[in-house]
Amino acid sequence: MDAITMIKERRSVRKFKNEKVDRETMKEIISISRWAPSWKNLQVARYTLVDDEAIIKQLASEGVNGFVYNINTLKNAKGVLVLSFVKGKSGKIDKDNYATSKANSWEVFDAGIACQTFCLAAHAKGVGTCIMGIIDEDSIAKIIGLPDEETVAALIVYGYEDEHPNATARKDVDDIIRFIG
Image 1 (spheres, one colour):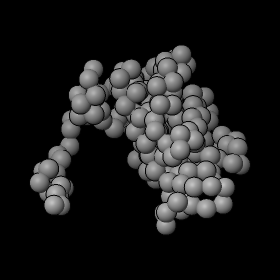
Image 2 (image 1 turned 30 degrees about the horizontal axis):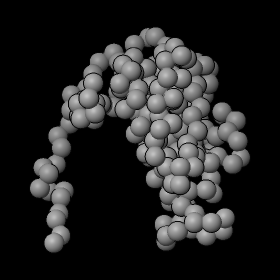
Image 3 (image 1 turned 90 degrees about the vertical axis):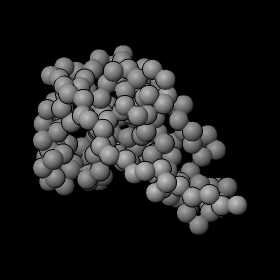
């Protein structure tokens, strides 16, 4: 699958088959994901894969702020990625100083690149994903025993698609582009 097709066809999937993605496939997806660019190539993204049903249920009950849509998606999930990043590295020009007024926001930027790379790599391997935006980072970190030097960036459900959602409308390119000069 070429990159343009992959970008256009990848969807947020919320309905999965009742089948776990094997760990070897997930290791391949993470192996691809680690090529995501990052600030100074620090590679701060970390990938915690959860395929234990009891822990996934705990994430559903304690990790999504009671958001029913996410709870229902997690109830049928066979796999969840907790994407985290190592704090205090991205965006710095040296040990103590940030390069821009964005300060540590670069950590989230790097995590976002890693997140999209993971979702595209999963799609290329036939695995659907859905990034959950309404989450309780502290509860998730506690549930999975996240190291103190990391923080949760995203909760991503993954699995084999039960259905492939249709594409939603996109803004016209003329509505989102500007040229200067």
